[in-house]
Length: 334
Length: 263
Image 1: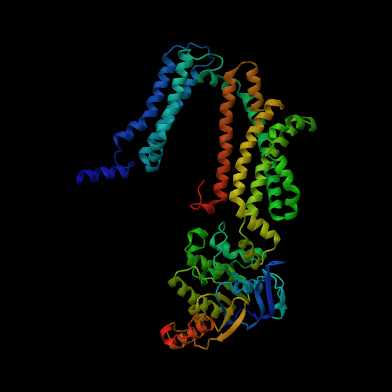
Image 2: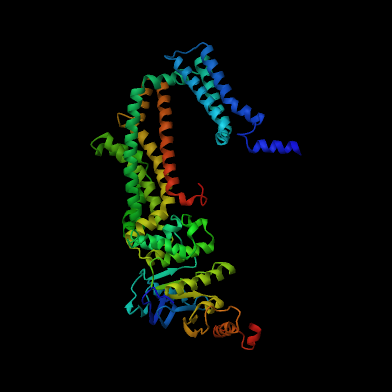
């Protein structure tokens, strides 16, 4: 009785009392793997050419220090401990993959070059080509933000007008249905002809690709708002402006956000394809250009940056959604 | 009794409403005549399909009569207006707004919220939702949500409050509780009340007059003036008398049955 009571207590408050042996092993795992990777990186001889081997070692050391600091924080706060305990296994897996990858490439030369470069070689590209990569990232970001915002704005306007005015829906719906489903990228040959520059053409394409899903979802969102909301608002003295902007629009927000997410996905695709085919800047362009020189490690570097960039943008949209749809908390989860 | 709202007299003159066109026409209301005095509490009662909700929607201005005329203090009713508040059976609170903002909707929609924020606080206090101002509708129970809906309709100081089975979806205790609250608010504000219900006890407990309606043809059958002092006793002899009378009028009592058995 006494013993089980104690065990339970320690399981309930892991930060304060002594953590279980299993938890200790799990938490130590990333640190052990980082140390092993570092040893592998420093001790085994390289079998492939790389410019800077030391920097990758510094990166591993920095990660090790950061992890140690996190672990120390976990001793103080129970919340940090719980997060560490849950994140440690996945962190360990990522470290393991990077270690095995380096072993197979740089240290054993088991995968063919130039197609499968080592992580050290990719770090080379990130360091050496940093100016160019930064400029390309900013170009891509500019195109993405401009195109997406324009597309989302017109999508919202189109959707609201279609949802609210029968006449507007009558005239626009056939075009939306007929032209909308064409992937924006399929327009590239035409659009490049019509627009004065490849930049404006790309902005248009991204906007077009975003406009379609945002329009459709906004429209169906507004058309689906319960009639009694409008009736209540009208008996409270609401005019048409209030009904559209303060009743229909917020009521449609859950669907509008689905449209915004769909549009964002499309805009990534359109951005990269447009850059690969027409625009002479940006990450898509960089990838094609590096591929032309068979510098695949640069391709991977650009892919890595893209992954970081796009997932950050998506997280931002999620943050915005959580803020706007805070009233849904506990109501719907998707 | 303090009368806050001025006026609030409703005149319903020869009002008919038919739905559907061509072959299958449904007469929802047929030549309804009713005068509601300012500050009066009137209930509309009858089986479902008797057009009581239709009549309420006509008074609210959400629907137009096929024939006849409706007036508020002599002015023809031509559309919805904040002087005629409406509460549905479903609270229909805006789920994206907090309770405070829901209640403030009427003032916000009319562009007078800035000067009258205090009114919102006062009304929320009046219906006893002070601690739930910042809650969202899905966090409230059915009774509290209906209080919020009531507050939202009252914030505009309507001359007439139209209630479409507002307590119909609530349990018996919450219901009786809210009936008393409604009476308290009515007495405090002097708002004219038109209350649709299918609960005979509720109608007798609340109303100055009970309007009994019949379906097919949908029209007013009888108007019973409830001449009982307030606060009314739900199990008093007078109460039962009115109850039986309304039951009989609705033809819910077999011809042979004796009134004693019904009670």
